[in-house]
Amino acid sequence: MCVNYLKIGKYEEAKRIIDSLQYIPYGNRDDVKVSMYQVIAEIECEIGSISKAMQFINESMEISKKSNCDVMLCEALRVRGKINFKASNYNDAEADYSEAMKIAIKGDYYEVQANILDSWAQYDLIKERYDNGISKLLKALEISEKNKCVLISRNIYNQLYVLNKKNNNYEEALKYYEKYIDINDELNCKRNNFSFVNLENEKSKYEAAMFKSLYDDIKVISTIGQKITSDLSFEKILENTYKEISMIMNADVVGISTIKESDGILDYALFIDRGNKLHLKNVHVEDEASFGAYCVRNRCTILVNDLHNDYTKYVPKLKFDISPDSTQSAMYCPLILEGKVKGFLNVQSYKKNAYTENDLNKLKILGSYVAIALENSYLYNKTKYISSRDFLTGLLSRMEIFVEGEKAFNECREKGKELAVIMIDIDDFKVINDKYGHSTGDYVLKAIGNIINEKIGKYGFAGRYGGEEFLMVLQDIDEKKVYSICEDIRAAIGSTNIYCEKKLKVTASIGIFIYKGKESSIDQCINFADKALYIAKAEGKNKIVKYQNYS
Image 1 (cartoon, rainbow, N blue to C red):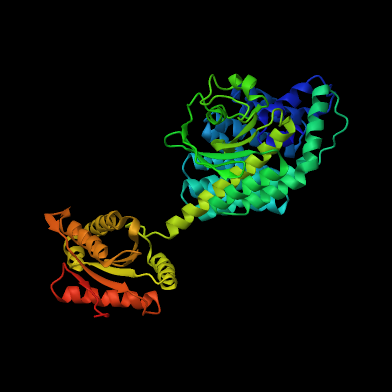
Image 2: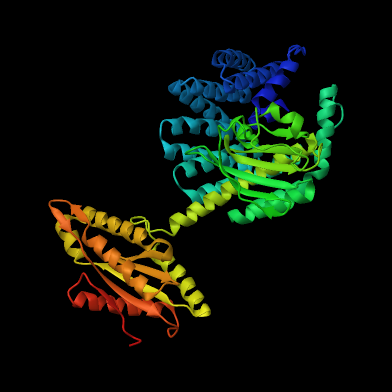
Protein backbone atom coordinates (compact mmCIF):
# COMPACT_ATOMS: atom_id res chain seq x y z
CA MET A 1 0.00 0.00 0.00
CA CYS A 2 2.88 2.34 0.87
CA VAL A 3 4.52 1.81 -2.55
CA ASN A 4 1.21 2.45 -4.33
CA TYR A 5 0.71 5.68 -2.41
CA LEU A 6 4.24 6.67 -3.42
CA LYS A 7 3.59 5.94 -7.10
CA ILE A 8 0.44 8.03 -7.22
CA GLY A 9 2.11 10.97 -5.49
CA LYS A 10 0.49 10.61 -2.04
CA TYR A 11 3.79 11.15 -0.19
CA GLU A 12 2.39 12.16 3.20
CA GLU A 13 0.12 9.09 3.26
CA ALA A 14 3.07 6.87 2.34
CA LYS A 15 5.16 8.45 5.11
CA ARG A 16 2.42 7.84 7.69
CA ILE A 17 2.34 4.15 6.78
CA ILE A 18 6.13 3.91 7.01
CA ASP A 19 6.09 5.65 10.40
CA SER A 20 3.49 3.19 11.68
CA LEU A 21 5.71 0.25 10.64
CA GLN A 22 8.97 1.49 12.11
CA TYR A 23 8.76 -0.71 15.22
CA ILE A 24 8.09 -3.95 13.37
CA PRO A 25 11.16 -6.24 13.82
CA TYR A 26 12.86 -7.07 10.53
CA GLY A 27 15.11 -9.82 11.90
CA ASN A 28 17.77 -10.75 9.35
CA ARG A 29 15.63 -10.25 6.27
CA ASP A 30 17.83 -8.01 4.17
CA ASP A 31 15.26 -7.82 1.37
CA VAL A 32 12.76 -6.21 3.74
CA LYS A 33 15.34 -3.73 5.01
CA VAL A 34 16.43 -2.80 1.48
CA SER A 35 12.85 -2.23 0.33
CA MET A 36 11.97 -0.19 3.41
CA TYR A 37 15.08 1.99 3.15
CA GLN A 38 14.44 2.62 -0.56
CA VAL A 39 10.85 3.64 0.05
CA ILE A 40 11.86 5.90 2.95
CA ALA A 41 14.60 7.45 0.81
CA GLU A 42 12.18 8.17 -2.03
CA ILE A 43 9.61 9.67 0.34
CA GLU A 44 12.21 11.90 2.02
CA CYS A 45 13.41 12.97 -1.43
CA GLU A 46 9.90 13.93 -2.56
CA ILE A 47 9.17 15.96 0.58
CA GLY A 48 12.52 17.76 0.32
CA SER A 49 14.69 16.02 2.96
CA ILE A 50 17.62 15.34 0.63
CA SER A 51 20.24 14.50 3.30
CA LYS A 52 17.93 11.97 4.98
CA ALA A 53 17.07 10.50 1.61
CA MET A 54 20.73 10.05 0.72
CA GLN A 55 21.45 8.44 4.11
CA PHE A 56 18.74 5.80 3.67
CA ILE A 57 19.54 5.04 0.03
CA ASN A 58 23.23 4.54 0.79
CA GLU A 59 22.32 2.05 3.52
CA SER A 60 20.03 0.28 1.05
CA MET A 61 22.83 0.10 -1.54
CA GLU A 62 25.31 -1.35 0.95
CA ILE A 63 22.92 -4.17 1.87
CA SER A 64 22.09 -4.81 -1.81
CA LYS A 65 25.78 -5.15 -2.71
CA LYS A 66 26.49 -7.50 0.22
CA SER A 67 23.49 -9.65 -0.73
CA ASN A 68 24.43 -9.72 -4.44
CA CYS A 69 20.84 -8.71 -5.22
CA ASP A 70 21.03 -7.03 -8.63
CA VAL A 71 17.40 -6.04 -8.90
CA MET A 72 17.51 -4.25 -5.53
CA LEU A 73 20.83 -2.60 -6.38
CA CYS A 74 19.37 -1.49 -9.69
CA GLU A 75 16.35 0.06 -7.97
CA ALA A 76 18.60 1.69 -5.34
CA LEU A 77 20.69 3.30 -8.09
CA ARG A 78 17.52 4.62 -9.70
CA VAL A 79 16.39 6.19 -6.43
CA ARG A 80 19.86 7.63 -5.79
CA GLY A 81 19.80 9.10 -9.28
CA LYS A 82 16.47 10.72 -8.43
CA ILE A 83 17.92 12.12 -5.18
CA ASN A 84 21.00 13.47 -6.97
CA PHE A 85 18.69 15.02 -9.55
CA LYS A 86 16.66 16.74 -6.79
CA ALA A 87 19.93 17.98 -5.26
CA SER A 88 20.97 19.37 -8.69
CA ASN A 89 23.88 16.90 -8.85
CA TYR A 90 23.05 16.25 -12.49
CA ASN A 91 26.24 14.45 -13.52
CA ASP A 92 25.98 12.06 -10.56
CA ALA A 93 22.32 11.51 -11.37
CA GLU A 94 23.09 10.61 -14.98
CA ALA A 95 25.85 8.22 -13.87
CA ASP A 96 23.44 6.48 -11.47
CA TYR A 97 20.74 6.16 -14.13
CA SER A 98 23.22 4.84 -16.68
CA GLU A 99 24.57 2.17 -14.32
CA ALA A 100 21.07 1.22 -13.16
CA MET A 101 19.89 0.86 -16.76
CA LYS A 102 22.76 -1.48 -17.65
CA ILE A 103 21.89 -3.76 -14.71
CA ALA A 104 18.15 -3.63 -15.50
CA ILE A 105 18.67 -4.56 -19.16
CA LYS A 106 21.04 -7.37 -18.26
CA GLY A 107 18.57 -8.82 -15.75
CA ASP A 108 15.41 -8.20 -17.85
CA TYR A 109 13.92 -6.10 -15.05
CA TYR A 110 11.30 -4.43 -17.22
CA GLU A 111 9.39 -2.39 -14.64
CA VAL A 112 12.67 -1.07 -13.26
CA GLN A 113 13.77 -0.15 -16.81
CA ALA A 114 10.59 1.89 -17.29
CA ASN A 115 11.07 3.58 -13.91
CA ILE A 116 14.69 4.46 -14.70
CA LEU A 117 13.86 5.89 -18.12
CA ASP A 118 11.03 7.91 -16.61
CA SER A 119 13.33 9.42 -13.97
CA TRP A 120 16.26 9.80 -16.38
CA ALA A 121 14.12 11.74 -18.83
CA GLN A 122 13.78 14.51 -16.23
CA TYR A 123 17.55 15.06 -16.40
CA ASP A 124 17.37 15.59 -20.16
CA LEU A 125 14.37 17.90 -19.90
CA ILE A 126 15.96 20.11 -17.24
CA LYS A 127 19.01 20.38 -19.48
CA GLU A 128 16.67 21.33 -22.36
CA ARG A 129 17.59 18.18 -24.29
CA TYR A 130 13.94 17.75 -25.18
CA ASP A 131 14.38 15.18 -27.95
CA ASN A 132 16.40 12.90 -25.64
CA GLY A 133 13.93 13.35 -22.80
CA ILE A 134 10.86 12.64 -24.91
CA SER A 135 12.61 9.65 -26.50
CA LYS A 136 13.25 8.16 -23.04
CA LEU A 137 9.65 8.81 -21.98
CA LEU A 138 8.27 7.11 -25.09
CA LYS A 139 10.58 4.12 -24.56
CA ALA A 140 9.51 3.91 -20.92
CA LEU A 141 5.89 4.10 -22.02
CA GLU A 142 6.41 1.28 -24.53
CA ILE A 143 7.90 -0.94 -21.80
CA SER A 144 5.30 -0.06 -19.17
CA GLU A 145 2.38 -0.59 -21.57
CA LYS A 146 3.76 -3.95 -22.70
CA ASN A 147 4.24 -5.12 -19.11
CA LYS A 148 1.03 -3.54 -17.75
CA CYS A 149 2.85 -1.16 -15.36
CA VAL A 150 -0.24 1.05 -15.05
CA LEU A 151 1.06 3.59 -12.53
CA ILE A 152 4.21 4.22 -14.56
CA SER A 153 2.15 4.65 -17.75
CA ARG A 154 -0.11 7.10 -15.91
CA ASN A 155 2.84 9.23 -14.85
CA ILE A 156 4.40 9.23 -18.32
CA TYR A 157 1.13 10.15 -20.08
CA ASN A 158 0.83 13.08 -17.69
CA GLN A 159 4.38 14.24 -18.43
CA LEU A 160 3.85 13.96 -22.20
CA TYR A 161 0.63 15.95 -21.86
CA VAL A 162 2.39 18.74 -19.93
CA LEU A 163 5.33 18.84 -22.37
CA ASN A 164 3.14 19.02 -25.47
CA LYS A 165 0.87 21.63 -23.93
CA LYS A 166 3.91 23.73 -22.99
CA ASN A 167 5.14 23.51 -26.60
CA ASN A 168 1.66 24.39 -27.96
CA ASN A 169 1.22 20.91 -29.51
CA TYR A 170 -2.41 20.88 -28.43
CA GLU A 171 -3.56 17.88 -30.48
CA GLU A 172 -0.81 15.69 -29.01
CA ALA A 173 -1.44 17.14 -25.55
CA LEU A 174 -5.12 16.26 -25.76
CA LYS A 175 -4.30 12.72 -26.92
CA TYR A 176 -1.97 12.06 -23.99
CA TYR A 177 -4.32 13.77 -21.56
CA GLU A 178 -7.17 11.46 -22.55
CA LYS A 179 -4.90 8.43 -21.99
CA TYR A 180 -3.95 9.81 -18.59
CA ILE A 181 -7.62 10.24 -17.65
CA ASP A 182 -8.50 6.72 -18.84
CA ILE A 183 -5.88 5.26 -16.48
CA ASN A 184 -7.07 7.54 -13.67
CA ASP A 185 -10.61 6.24 -14.12
CA GLU A 186 -9.32 2.66 -14.07
CA LEU A 187 -7.35 3.33 -10.87
CA ASN A 188 -10.34 5.03 -9.23
CA CYS A 189 -12.45 1.94 -9.86
CA LYS A 190 -9.74 -0.31 -8.41
CA ARG A 191 -9.35 1.88 -5.33
CA ASN A 192 -13.06 1.59 -4.67
CA ASN A 193 -12.79 -2.20 -4.51
CA PHE A 194 -10.71 -2.10 -1.30
CA SER A 195 -11.67 -4.60 1.37
CA PHE A 196 -13.44 -2.67 4.10
CA VAL A 197 -12.54 -5.13 6.88
CA ASN A 198 -9.70 -5.56 9.37
CA LEU A 199 -9.36 -1.82 10.01
CA GLU A 200 -8.19 -1.54 13.58
CA ASN A 201 -8.85 1.97 14.79
CA GLU A 202 -11.93 4.13 15.03
CA LYS A 203 -10.71 6.71 12.53
CA SER A 204 -10.10 4.01 9.94
CA LYS A 205 -13.52 2.50 10.60
CA TYR A 206 -15.14 5.88 10.10
CA GLU A 207 -13.22 6.42 6.86
CA ALA A 208 -14.11 2.91 5.73
CA ALA A 209 -17.80 3.55 6.30
CA MET A 210 -17.56 6.76 4.32
CA PHE A 211 -15.71 5.05 1.47
CA LYS A 212 -18.22 2.19 1.53
CA SER A 213 -21.04 4.67 1.13
CA LEU A 214 -19.19 6.28 -1.77
CA TYR A 215 -18.63 2.86 -3.29
CA ASP A 216 -22.40 2.33 -3.43
CA ASP A 217 -22.64 5.44 -5.63
CA ILE A 218 -19.47 4.92 -7.64
CA LYS A 219 -21.13 3.49 -10.74
CA VAL A 220 -23.55 6.39 -10.86
CA ILE A 221 -20.80 8.97 -10.31
CA SER A 222 -18.53 7.28 -12.86
CA THR A 223 -21.31 7.30 -15.46
CA ILE A 224 -22.00 10.96 -14.74
CA GLY A 225 -18.30 11.77 -14.99
CA GLN A 226 -18.00 10.01 -18.33
CA LYS A 227 -20.99 11.93 -19.63
CA ILE A 228 -19.52 15.25 -18.49
CA THR A 229 -16.08 14.54 -19.96
CA SER A 230 -17.41 13.12 -23.23
CA ASP A 231 -18.40 16.53 -24.59
CA LEU A 232 -15.97 19.17 -25.81
CA SER A 233 -18.52 21.99 -25.96
CA PHE A 234 -18.04 24.39 -23.03
CA GLU A 235 -21.75 25.20 -22.84
CA LYS A 236 -22.72 21.52 -23.03
CA ILE A 237 -20.34 20.66 -20.17
CA LEU A 238 -21.99 23.29 -17.98
CA GLU A 239 -25.47 22.08 -18.91
CA ASN A 240 -24.64 18.41 -18.26
CA THR A 241 -23.01 19.23 -14.92
CA TYR A 242 -26.12 21.04 -13.71
CA LYS A 243 -28.47 18.26 -14.82
CA GLU A 244 -26.41 15.44 -13.35
CA ILE A 245 -25.75 17.12 -9.99
CA SER A 246 -29.45 17.86 -9.63
CA MET A 247 -30.18 14.14 -10.02
CA ILE A 248 -27.95 12.86 -7.20
CA MET A 249 -28.22 15.50 -4.47
CA ASN A 250 -30.30 18.36 -3.12
CA ALA A 251 -29.23 21.15 -5.45
CA ASP A 252 -31.50 24.20 -5.49
CA VAL A 253 -28.52 26.20 -6.71
CA VAL A 254 -25.62 25.01 -8.87
CA GLY A 255 -22.72 27.24 -9.81
CA ILE A 256 -19.47 26.80 -11.74
CA SER A 257 -16.83 29.51 -11.75
CA THR A 258 -13.59 29.65 -13.70
CA ILE A 259 -10.57 31.77 -12.83
CA LYS A 260 -8.75 34.11 -15.18
CA GLU A 261 -5.16 33.51 -14.12
CA SER A 262 -3.97 36.80 -15.63
CA ASP A 263 -5.98 38.99 -13.26
CA GLY A 264 -7.38 36.64 -10.59
CA ILE A 265 -10.99 37.25 -11.61
CA LEU A 266 -13.54 34.52 -10.81
CA ASP A 267 -16.15 34.41 -13.55
CA TYR A 268 -19.43 32.57 -12.96
CA ALA A 269 -19.73 30.56 -16.16
CA LEU A 270 -22.90 28.97 -14.76
CA PHE A 271 -25.28 29.91 -11.95
CA ILE A 272 -28.72 28.33 -11.86
CA ASP A 273 -31.14 29.02 -9.00
CA ARG A 274 -34.17 26.70 -8.94
CA GLY A 275 -34.07 26.28 -12.70
CA ASN A 276 -33.45 29.95 -13.52
CA LYS A 277 -30.15 30.89 -15.13
CA LEU A 278 -28.75 34.02 -13.49
CA HIS A 279 -25.79 36.22 -14.39
CA LEU A 280 -23.70 37.01 -11.32
CA LYS A 281 -21.02 39.67 -11.12
CA ASN A 282 -17.42 38.57 -11.24
CA VAL A 283 -15.44 38.58 -8.00
CA HIS A 284 -11.71 38.79 -7.35
CA VAL A 285 -9.92 35.82 -5.80
CA GLU A 286 -8.88 38.07 -2.88
CA ASP A 287 -12.48 39.07 -2.10
CA GLU A 288 -12.87 38.31 1.62
CA ALA A 289 -16.66 38.30 1.47
CA SER A 290 -16.87 35.49 -1.10
CA PHE A 291 -17.11 31.79 -0.22
CA GLY A 292 -15.91 30.93 -3.73
CA ALA A 293 -12.85 33.16 -3.42
CA TYR A 294 -12.03 31.56 -0.04
CA CYS A 295 -12.37 28.09 -1.59
CA VAL A 296 -10.01 28.95 -4.45
CA ARG A 297 -7.56 30.99 -2.37
CA ASN A 298 -7.14 28.24 0.22
CA ARG A 299 -7.56 25.30 -2.21
CA CYS A 300 -10.09 23.75 0.17
CA THR A 301 -13.66 22.48 0.25
CA ILE A 302 -16.40 24.22 2.22
CA LEU A 303 -19.37 22.54 3.89
CA VAL A 304 -21.96 24.80 5.55
CA ASN A 305 -25.26 23.47 6.90
CA ASP A 306 -26.39 26.58 8.79
CA LEU A 307 -25.36 29.69 6.93
CA HIS A 308 -26.37 32.09 9.71
CA ASN A 309 -24.15 30.42 12.32
CA ASP A 310 -21.36 28.96 10.16
CA TYR A 311 -20.39 31.62 7.63
CA THR A 312 -17.83 33.32 9.91
CA LYS A 313 -15.63 30.21 9.73
CA TYR A 314 -14.82 31.23 6.16
CA VAL A 315 -15.71 34.90 5.59
CA PRO A 316 -15.86 37.80 8.07
CA LYS A 317 -18.98 39.25 6.48
CA LEU A 318 -21.45 38.55 3.71
CA LYS A 319 -22.53 40.73 0.79
CA PHE A 320 -26.18 39.98 1.50
CA ASP A 321 -28.51 39.81 4.49
CA ILE A 322 -29.39 36.31 5.68
CA SER A 323 -33.14 35.71 5.81
CA PRO A 324 -35.44 32.67 5.86
CA ASP A 325 -35.60 33.06 2.07
CA SER A 326 -31.82 32.73 1.66
CA THR A 327 -30.01 29.49 0.94
CA GLN A 328 -29.16 27.79 4.24
CA SER A 329 -26.71 25.05 3.23
CA ALA A 330 -23.83 25.13 0.77
CA MET A 331 -20.85 23.15 -0.51
CA TYR A 332 -17.88 24.53 -2.41
CA CYS A 333 -15.20 22.46 -4.11
CA PRO A 334 -12.08 23.82 -5.88
CA LEU A 335 -11.53 22.59 -9.42
CA ILE A 336 -7.88 21.51 -9.36
CA LEU A 337 -5.95 20.14 -12.31
CA GLU A 338 -2.21 19.54 -12.51
CA GLY A 339 -1.80 21.32 -9.18
CA LYS A 340 -3.50 24.48 -10.46
CA VAL A 341 -6.87 25.76 -9.28
CA LYS A 342 -9.07 26.32 -12.33
CA GLY A 343 -12.15 27.57 -10.47
CA PHE A 344 -14.77 26.10 -8.17
CA LEU A 345 -17.98 24.06 -8.15
CA ASN A 346 -20.79 25.21 -5.86
CA VAL A 347 -24.04 23.55 -4.73
CA GLN A 348 -26.58 25.20 -2.39
CA SER A 349 -29.89 24.30 -0.74
CA TYR A 350 -32.65 26.37 0.82
CA LYS A 351 -32.87 23.79 3.63
CA LYS A 352 -30.67 23.62 6.72
CA ASN A 353 -28.51 20.53 7.25
CA ALA A 354 -28.96 19.50 3.63
CA TYR A 355 -25.50 17.99 3.12
CA THR A 356 -23.22 15.34 4.63
CA GLU A 357 -19.53 14.54 4.31
CA ASN A 358 -20.61 11.87 1.84
CA ASP A 359 -22.26 14.53 -0.33
CA LEU A 360 -19.09 16.61 -0.17
CA ASN A 361 -16.98 13.65 -1.27
CA LYS A 362 -19.32 13.00 -4.19
CA LEU A 363 -19.04 16.65 -5.17
CA LYS A 364 -15.23 16.42 -5.00
CA ILE A 365 -15.24 13.42 -7.37
CA LEU A 366 -17.60 15.20 -9.75
CA GLY A 367 -15.42 18.30 -9.45
CA SER A 368 -12.42 16.36 -10.72
CA TYR A 369 -14.44 15.30 -13.78
CA VAL A 370 -15.63 18.87 -14.36
CA ALA A 371 -12.04 20.16 -14.15
CA ILE A 372 -10.95 17.55 -16.70
CA ALA A 373 -13.87 18.33 -19.00
CA LEU A 374 -13.22 22.07 -18.93
CA GLU A 375 -9.52 21.52 -19.66
CA ASN A 376 -10.37 19.19 -22.56
CA SER A 377 -12.76 21.81 -23.92
CA TYR A 378 -10.10 24.51 -23.59
CA LEU A 379 -7.48 22.42 -25.39
CA TYR A 380 -9.90 21.39 -28.12
CA ASN A 381 -11.11 24.92 -28.76
CA LYS A 382 -7.59 26.33 -28.69
CA THR A 383 -6.46 23.69 -31.19
CA LYS A 384 -9.52 24.39 -33.32
CA TYR A 385 -8.88 28.14 -33.15
CA ILE A 386 -5.21 27.80 -34.13
CA SER A 387 -5.99 25.44 -37.01
CA SER A 388 -8.68 27.80 -38.32
CA ARG A 389 -6.43 30.88 -38.38
CA ASP A 390 -3.89 32.20 -40.83
CA PHE A 391 -0.65 32.21 -38.84
CA LEU A 392 0.57 35.52 -40.25
CA THR A 393 -2.49 37.78 -40.08
CA GLY A 394 -4.60 36.10 -37.42
CA LEU A 395 -7.60 36.18 -39.78
CA LEU A 396 -9.43 33.01 -40.82
CA SER A 397 -7.46 30.57 -42.95
CA ARG A 398 -8.40 29.98 -46.60
CA MET A 399 -10.19 26.73 -45.73
CA GLU A 400 -12.04 28.24 -42.77
CA ILE A 401 -13.22 31.32 -44.67
CA PHE A 402 -14.78 28.99 -47.25
CA VAL A 403 -16.48 26.92 -44.52
CA GLU A 404 -17.83 29.98 -42.70
CA GLY A 405 -18.74 31.65 -45.98
CA GLU A 406 -20.78 28.61 -47.03
CA LYS A 407 -22.65 28.67 -43.70
CA ALA A 408 -23.40 32.39 -44.04
CA PHE A 409 -24.53 31.96 -47.66
CA ASN A 410 -26.92 29.11 -46.78
CA GLU A 411 -28.35 31.06 -43.86
CA CYS A 412 -29.00 34.16 -45.98
CA ARG A 413 -30.54 32.08 -48.77
CA GLU A 414 -32.91 30.35 -46.32
CA LYS A 415 -33.95 33.62 -44.64
CA GLY A 416 -34.08 35.68 -47.84
CA LYS A 417 -31.42 38.11 -46.66
CA GLU A 418 -28.64 39.87 -48.55
CA LEU A 419 -24.98 38.93 -48.23
CA ALA A 420 -21.94 41.03 -49.14
CA VAL A 421 -18.86 39.21 -50.44
CA ILE A 422 -15.77 41.40 -50.73
CA MET A 423 -12.33 40.76 -52.22
CA ILE A 424 -9.38 42.94 -51.16
CA ASP A 425 -6.02 42.87 -52.95
CA ILE A 426 -2.85 44.77 -52.00
CA ASP A 427 -1.72 46.82 -54.99
CA ASP A 428 1.74 46.04 -56.41
CA PHE A 429 2.51 43.61 -53.60
CA LYS A 430 5.02 41.71 -55.74
CA VAL A 431 7.03 44.91 -56.15
CA ILE A 432 7.08 45.36 -52.35
CA ASN A 433 8.33 41.81 -51.85
CA ASP A 434 10.93 42.01 -54.62
CA LYS A 435 12.25 45.46 -53.70
CA TYR A 436 12.09 45.43 -49.90
CA GLY A 437 12.12 41.73 -49.04
CA HIS A 438 9.64 39.19 -47.71
CA SER A 439 9.93 40.40 -44.11
CA THR A 440 8.56 43.79 -45.23
CA GLY A 441 5.89 41.98 -47.22
CA ASP A 442 4.91 40.00 -44.14
CA TYR A 443 4.72 43.20 -42.11
CA VAL A 444 2.38 44.72 -44.71
CA LEU A 445 0.13 41.63 -44.62
CA LYS A 446 -0.05 41.74 -40.81
CA ALA A 447 -0.83 45.46 -40.80
CA ILE A 448 -3.63 45.09 -43.34
CA GLY A 449 -4.98 42.03 -41.54
CA ASN A 450 -5.23 44.14 -38.37
CA ILE A 451 -7.02 46.94 -40.23
CA ILE A 452 -9.58 44.55 -41.75
CA ASN A 453 -10.19 42.86 -38.40
CA GLU A 454 -10.71 46.21 -36.68
CA LYS A 455 -13.02 47.73 -39.31
CA ILE A 456 -15.21 44.69 -39.92
CA GLY A 457 -16.38 44.69 -36.30
CA LYS A 458 -19.59 42.82 -35.58
CA TYR A 459 -20.81 42.80 -39.18
CA GLY A 460 -19.07 39.69 -40.45
CA PHE A 461 -15.75 37.90 -40.75
CA ALA A 462 -12.65 37.92 -42.90
CA GLY A 463 -9.90 35.57 -43.98
CA ARG A 464 -6.72 35.46 -45.97
CA TYR A 465 -7.80 34.16 -49.36
CA GLY A 466 -4.25 33.59 -50.59
CA GLY A 467 -1.05 35.56 -51.10
CA GLU A 468 -1.94 39.24 -50.84
CA GLU A 469 -5.72 38.71 -51.24
CA PHE A 470 -8.29 38.89 -48.46
CA LEU A 471 -11.94 37.81 -48.46
CA MET A 472 -14.66 39.44 -46.33
CA VAL A 473 -18.22 38.25 -45.80
CA LEU A 474 -20.78 40.64 -44.29
CA GLN A 475 -24.27 39.52 -43.23
CA ASP A 476 -27.55 41.33 -42.64
CA ILE A 477 -26.17 44.75 -43.58
CA ASP A 478 -27.33 47.38 -46.09
CA GLU A 479 -25.26 48.38 -49.12
CA LYS A 480 -24.53 51.83 -47.74
CA LYS A 481 -22.87 50.32 -44.68
CA VAL A 482 -20.97 47.83 -46.87
CA TYR A 483 -19.49 50.72 -48.88
CA SER A 484 -18.73 52.61 -45.66
CA ILE A 485 -16.76 49.69 -44.20
CA CYS A 486 -14.89 49.12 -47.47
CA GLU A 487 -14.02 52.80 -47.76
CA ASP A 488 -12.79 52.85 -44.14
CA ILE A 489 -10.54 49.89 -44.93
CA ARG A 490 -9.25 51.40 -48.19
CA ALA A 491 -8.54 54.75 -46.51
CA ALA A 492 -6.86 53.17 -43.47
CA ILE A 493 -4.58 51.08 -45.69
CA GLY A 494 -3.68 54.14 -47.75
CA SER A 495 -2.75 56.15 -44.66
CA THR A 496 -0.63 53.40 -43.10
CA ASN A 497 3.09 54.12 -43.17
CA ILE A 498 5.47 51.20 -43.60
CA TYR A 499 9.04 52.04 -42.63
CA CYS A 500 11.88 50.10 -44.26
CA GLU A 501 14.62 51.74 -46.38
CA LYS A 502 12.22 54.65 -46.75
CA LYS A 503 8.63 55.42 -45.81
CA LEU A 504 6.47 53.12 -47.91
CA LYS A 505 2.89 53.83 -48.93
CA VAL A 506 0.55 50.92 -49.56
CA THR A 507 -2.83 50.89 -51.30
CA ALA A 508 -5.47 48.25 -51.94
CA SER A 509 -8.18 47.57 -54.51
CA ILE A 510 -11.56 46.24 -53.42
CA GLY A 511 -14.27 44.31 -55.29
CA ILE A 512 -17.80 44.00 -53.89
CA PHE A 513 -20.58 41.59 -54.77
CA ILE A 514 -24.03 41.77 -53.12
CA TYR A 515 -25.94 38.48 -53.07
CA LYS A 516 -29.71 39.00 -53.49
CA GLY A 517 -30.94 35.45 -53.94
CA LYS A 518 -30.03 34.48 -57.51
CA GLU A 519 -26.71 32.65 -57.09
CA SER A 520 -26.55 28.99 -56.08
CA SER A 521 -23.29 28.93 -54.10
CA ILE A 522 -20.78 31.03 -52.22
CA ASP A 523 -18.24 30.16 -54.94
CA GLN A 524 -20.29 32.10 -57.50
CA CYS A 525 -20.43 35.08 -55.16
CA ILE A 526 -16.66 34.99 -54.66
CA ASN A 527 -16.16 34.75 -58.42
CA PHE A 528 -18.26 37.88 -59.01
CA ALA A 529 -16.45 39.79 -56.23
CA ASP A 530 -13.16 38.75 -57.85
CA LYS A 531 -14.34 40.11 -61.22
CA ALA A 532 -15.20 43.42 -59.55
CA LEU A 533 -11.72 43.45 -58.01
CA TYR A 534 -10.20 42.88 -61.47
CA ILE A 535 -12.09 45.92 -62.78
CA ALA A 536 -10.81 48.03 -59.85
CA LYS A 537 -7.26 47.01 -60.73
CA ALA A 538 -7.79 47.74 -64.43
CA GLU A 539 -9.20 51.19 -63.68
CA GLY A 540 -6.07 52.34 -61.85
CA LYS A 541 -6.06 50.53 -58.47
CA ASN A 542 -6.79 51.93 -55.01
CA LYS A 543 -10.49 51.79 -55.90
CA ILE A 544 -13.74 50.17 -54.78
CA VAL A 545 -15.86 48.55 -57.50
CA LYS A 546 -19.19 46.77 -57.13
CA TYR A 547 -20.07 43.95 -59.55
CA GLN A 548 -23.11 45.18 -61.48
CA ASN A 549 -25.01 41.97 -62.19
CA TYR A 550 -28.39 43.35 -61.09
CA SER A 551 -28.27 46.59 -63.08
